Image (tube, rainbow, N blue to C red; front, side):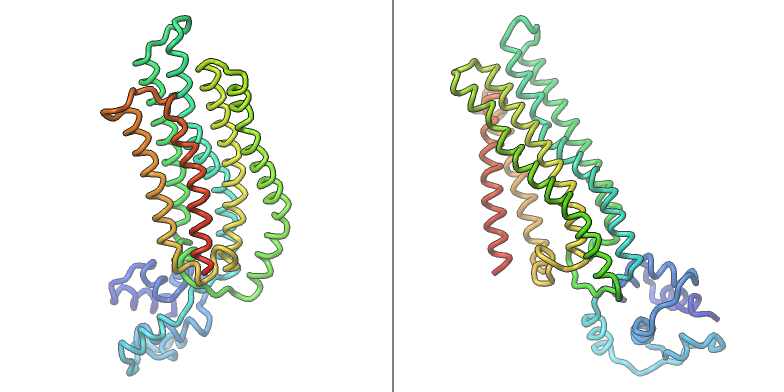
Length: 334
């Protein structure tokens, strides 16, 4: 019986899926699949780990002529200690596949973010022009169309982001668990990061300039004491330009983060990974709360159902989010 068949038999007797076995061995499900398909062979360290996990000898695993396992004495405590000490192993193939996946997902995530940020534009603009009879749109119709567009944009964005997250599920451990990389992986990733650095820097600069420029039309409208429709147009322009800036930030950040995760640098050091779940939850809760405040203020019992008067909530929320993020980074470093 070959090694591939032995691994399959032992895994099934234990009642584990390939993903569960991969988690216990600190490898990807893809690696286990290749072992069981006889497409590759575990290295000697993994052979030892497998023998301890299933309480069999390494001879049984490596010698095809041995059909029946030879049990070895090993307590659950020792086996658990071995597993806890083992870090996830990332091979050259794993690293290349993950970076390729993130490069493909980067424009999709950027588009999703663009849709989210720009989703209120139609609602604000239509609510404003509904006050002018020349356009022939009532307030109720404007609000209905605007809300439909907002919900549509948000839904499409969520669908895109969920699809990307589902593809990345196999590599979620890179953000949460300590890893060990195969020889040559760090060199490859650093070379890719060096090649991408000019693009990353350019996107950051352009995105920052766009964010600063986005408020200029609003200041001009305020200086000229323009009408409500001009103010709303300026706000819509601001949101659109900020959405483009976010698109650039997310595209470059997704690719750069994928390399930081493999190198365990900056935001993804082993110490920071321990806190990543908490900070991710804070960010999610923050924007859900902002959305709830906006909907309550605009459409609640004390609102006037005219979103153009409440756009400032998003502007304030954006500024405060920057402050919250800065505080969280300080806490993470400490």
